[in-house]
Image 1 (cartoon, rainbow, N blue to C red):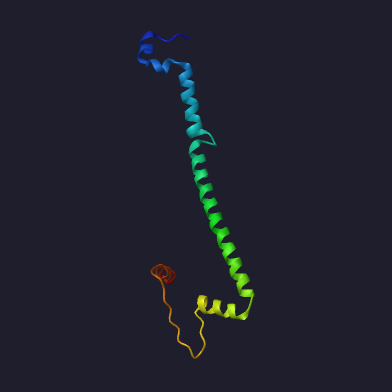
Image 2 (image 1 turned 45 degrees about the horizontal axis):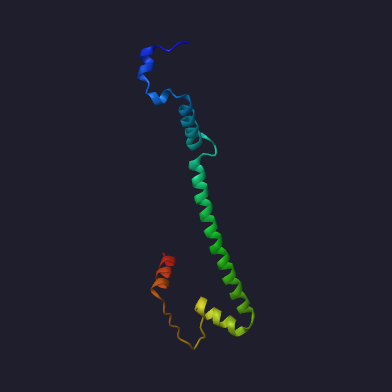
Length: 113
């Protein structure tokens, strides 16, 4: 099939190159249409990075909690100290004063709302 000359002249020269067209189509396919396209790959890598930072945070928390648990197992004195600090427990003849840093105060206010 022969293309008329007037239509052929209307097509820009770079669009006549079959190799360039095939590269452009390939890039469009890879970026947008493929099931493993670059856009979804970027989102997955971003999500993986978030999961890794979350993992590091939780591993640090586990380590911290294990050390607190070991400290609590060492004696009743440490258990009493923990109960007083964490749960604000007191003896009947005591008065309890809680002093919070501004950061702790904001956390406490958020928990109440």
